[in-house]
Amino acid sequence: EDQVTQSPEALRLQEGESSSLNCSYTVSGLRGLFWYRQDPGKGPEFLFTLYSAGEEKEKERLKATLTKKESFLHITAPKPEDSATYLCAVQGAYNQGGKLIFGQGTELSVKP
Amino acid sequence: GAGVSQSPSNKVTEKGKDVELRCDPISGHTALYWYRQSLGQGLEFLIYFQGNSAPDKSGLPSDRFSAERTGGSVSTLTIQRTQQEDSAVYLCASSLVRTAKNIQYFGAGTRLSVL
Image (tube, each protein chain N blue to C red):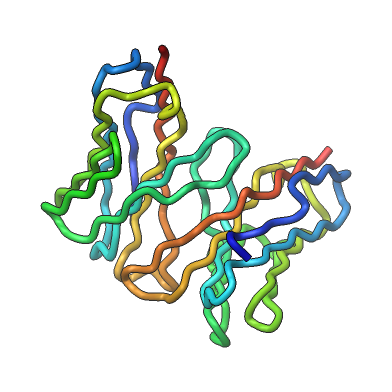
């Protein structure tokens, strides 16, 4: 069964304090791993998709990396506006229709 | 439209009543998904539509839940005889194609509260 586990559940950082969020997954053939950002009262907003081990993608202060077992979302010098819940999801090769399997999310809080 | 649109944004209903939730996907997107996000839980897949193919209903939690997609565009999720455990945020997503690289774009969701 495809499964995604994110850690930590919550992370509190000071502005400028870099850190990483972890997403561990088990899937029968990975089609893609997705990172989303979700603000309170809103739907998930797409950030990155990674398809193969060794792949990396960057956007502003965020960098996502992928291995065969996990993905990391690195946040460099975060700002208060980076505060949100970050969701990781996988799409398995044998998933009908490309549905996403989500982790529980990491709630990030960045204090000024 | 510019993004996925869902209505209503909030719905309060009494236990036992039926509710309908609407999703208007991004124009031209052929795939449409419904997910449920309960308090303290991750997003849970409910149902998927792709073009004229039979929908994947494997995530629907009970036969009280049903969904349809008319004309390959707007979708309605119906919950009959609502129960308190149905209280959650119901999210709709759409994507351009059902391929390995399809990216799902989400609406803001409908927050359902069953009293």
